[in-house]
Amino acid sequence: MGQITVQKDIDGIKGLCVIIPAVHGDSRGYFMETYSAHDMAEVGIDIVFVQDNQSMSTKGVLRGLHFQKQYPQTKLVRVIKGEVYDVAVDLRADSPTYGKYHGELLTEENKKQFLIPRGFAHGFLVLSDIAEFCYKCDDFYHPNDEGGMAWNDPEIGIQWPKLQGEYRGSASAEGYTVDGVALNLSDKDQKWLGIKDTFKF
Image (cartoon, rainbow, N blue to C red; front, side, top):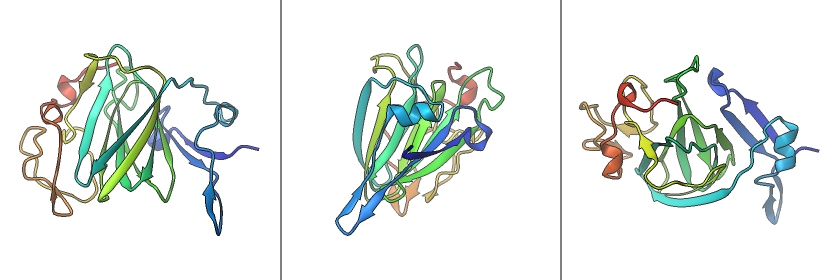
């Protein structure tokens, strides 16, 4: 019997899936299967993952929006501690939902997983004091192949929760806060351009 429930093609975006694992809990705590190739195959998802990654970030950190250009990756992401708002933007040139995004709240409580196919830009904003973020990839990371796009491009219009600030024409974090904490982006992530000037798959 399968241990997951899957919501496919979220917001009408082909390939985006939210996966909810069965959690078995009692007075001692809980147990769940975080990944089963058998269960995934049963619901029509046949992906071979080759690498697991994990990061820790503090409140107000925004990582993204990122993608690999010549070696794109499918990602299966989840949060093991804290809370993040996770976003995928469709960059597939032939997709009817090109330029559309979906955001999903991932927390240690809801234990949701977000499946993001190849051809998407991906990023997340940390809403809790600390967040630990895990993801599986179906290809290895290739240095010098990373691309990105502005996290605040008005043409995409991502509604990041708890974020306060005004768009000033660039991806700069200046003037933005999350619960009064200054938005924190890498130097590189503050230099990406909008979707009009971004790589298409």
